[in-house]
Image (cartoon, rainbow, N blue to C red; front, side, top):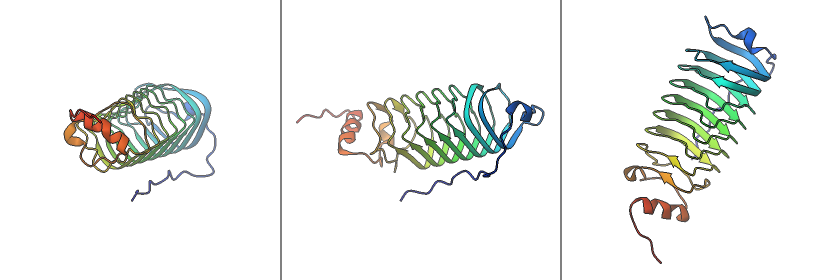
Length: 213
């Protein structure tokens, strides 16, 4: 049974605010704000926190936030190409129709996080942990999930061609509604993955079997 992913608990009466006026590098906490229709640069600001925030139609021309913390945050129609969100924590966060090609969430912890209709080719989640995470109708071509830990993760109607799950167990992961042409996974970590009959043929080839009618 699919575990329900908790939605961001965001106030309905957020006031639109200017990001630059909110940003204080001495005490980098952004909270209780609607930030929309702008271009933002965040250049290697460590330990920044985002709480009860909506980013709407925002272009991040540079987005580097090592050791960041996100709680109850929504990114709606944003551009976060090559974002660097390393060693960070994300709790109750939603990305909706965002362009996130090349984004990196390396060595991060994601809990109750949703990626909906996002472009995420070449995204990097190496060494990350996922708890109650959904990728829905998103494109993840050649993305990297090296040495990940999954607890209730869902790939729903996603494009996964060239995705890499090396050193990552796929036990209990359901890929039936997603499509992929080529996938990298260690043979010992295939056990328990849920696939269609057609998808299973591709996994059998990973085991070195030659399939003939």
